[in-house]
Length: 397
Image (cartoon, rainbow, N blue to C red):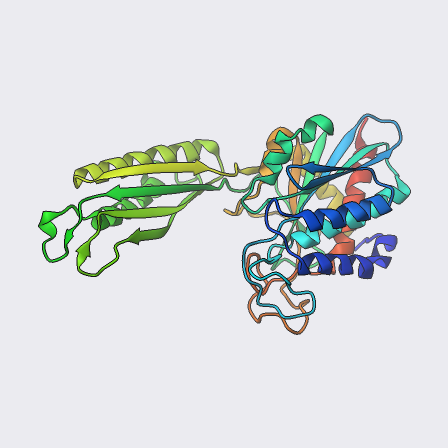
């Protein structure tokens, strides 16, 4: 691996920053302390900053030369609302909050790159360091864009990186086209007529209506959309009743829909509404149907993906730059890729052997209470950012 020696020499110091952030997790739009840490580091290295974009976002600005060209590098800062099982020294100090997705590491890898880029400036143009809040459901990327991210800091391309457990340290993965799905939520309330459970003919039971509805939704996946088009409907919550001998008045269904294209999403939403309304009507019940679209699909641009692949191949060898299999997980970097050309890629986090004594004993997977970011990635990820910047500007006419 061609890791930059100066960044490697700072690995211990940057790992301490990462562990400090891990120990003080903050939820979406509450990342005040984390933003302070980022701002203090950037300022100490002579990097001008802009704060408050998207509530708690930080943008660092590194200029080299006179070219008007610019590139954006994004890292997310927020934690998840879950209890950490790890008991090592840098475990979360805040109950019910945890860096279980590695955003602490993403932030630190970009900081490691920022220090080197600011010191050497071996490029002609401007690098915008985007430290984003609220990726975990808050749509922080969308909010930063609404606050003028690309207007105040015009850039020609934008790149994002995420750690990937199970992939070896020293490997990257990326693909053009859709790599992560859209994220959407639905809520359906079926209203019937309550009765004594021993006299069900006196009421309209919403529970069997809900059961038929759940089954019918899967025919949308198997019979309405094209088999080659990916789509998921998952009913994850069913709430009804308070007593075993009472037919309830209502039953509520909630869940998620995931797709890689807006066209498939439109089809699924339309058919779900049709199925819900007509299944309810067939049983003389009524339904209230709501469908909320959250994050759009994360779709990489071909040219930027091919460029990033070559940068990584030069660092770790072509055999260690894998094709990223699309996942039905979602990511709000999708908003940035809708606005600008770019690529979202993955860096291997290993299989969990990096965790110290006191980890929770479970797998080191994302959104798991025993997860921890692998600090061995910091010099590799930081070096990747630097090489990507230098190569991008060198390749521009």
